[in-house]
Image 1: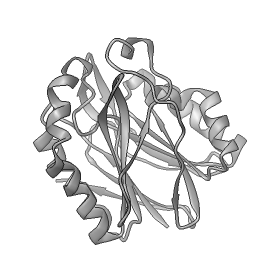
Image 2 (image 1 turned 90 degrees about the vertical axis):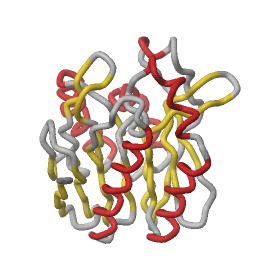
Image 3 (image 1 turned 30 degrees about the horizontal axis):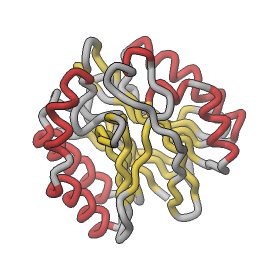
Length: 244
């Protein structure tokens, strides 16, 4: 089974541009017969907490959501995109999950970094995505480097730990040290999807990557190029597709 990990440069608050960039990457994954593709944290709006109220309503327009559902239905492809989710108590940092001929579901970041709490409210429940018998547990940025989150994913019989992030150079260094350890401890395949380019008050550092269950790095993208890293989780094979 092939899973695509997208590395994208979102433009702050420019939902239309970002949606189109997502579509370009989804088409790349479909060309290689991927069964799923996942994007970084807040990939649709860009990681810009102070702009979140200006962009959330634009994305939540029905036409935006239906675009991804149609792509999922037509290509039998699971798609996980990063976007804000408005609930009664506030706004969550969420992954919107589209599966063929099924209602859209969401996973919301459960543990917020302290500088996110003025803008967002946490999620309360772990989601596990099943694709062809593989259980995928998403984790969003800060929580993905907390050992307790990985431990809880293991109790839910996760096979694949999926980190959707927007991390700086220092943040990605910490992540790249952490993920091989949890891969070995829990027998996970670990997939990391990071953005590149300006985010809030930092520059997101890319280096999207994959590790097998022995903690061995299978492949890694660079720190500036948009593209899709495709991982065959059965064969531990990878390939890279770059956007022009």
